[in-house]
Length: 123
Image (cartoon, rainbow, N blue to C red):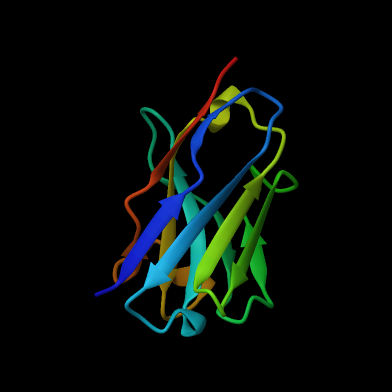
C-alpha cells in the first residue's frame, strides 16, 4: 500500500537549519507530484512546497519562500525539504504528501499523507 514516512524532525535552535526527508513506497513515486505541509499548534495544516513528478517545477508558499528548498530523488523514492533560518513560529508537525495529478492537487482529497515529523524551534 502507499506509504510515506517522514524523518529528520527534532529540536533546533532559532536560526538553525533542518533537512526533512520523506521515504515513499507502494506506488510509482516518479509519477507523483509531492510536497510538504505543516500544522502549527492551534492552526490548520498549511501548504509549504510542492515539486512536480520530474522535479523540474517547484512552487512555494509565500510565507516561507526564500527559507525552504524542496527536492526529490526519484531513483531512491525520496523527497526532501531543507529549512533554513528557523524561527520559533516554524514549530509544528511537518507532513509529506503525494498526488498523482499535479502540484496544484497536493493536500486535496485523493492525495496521500505521511504520519508527520515534529519540528520544535526553541532555545
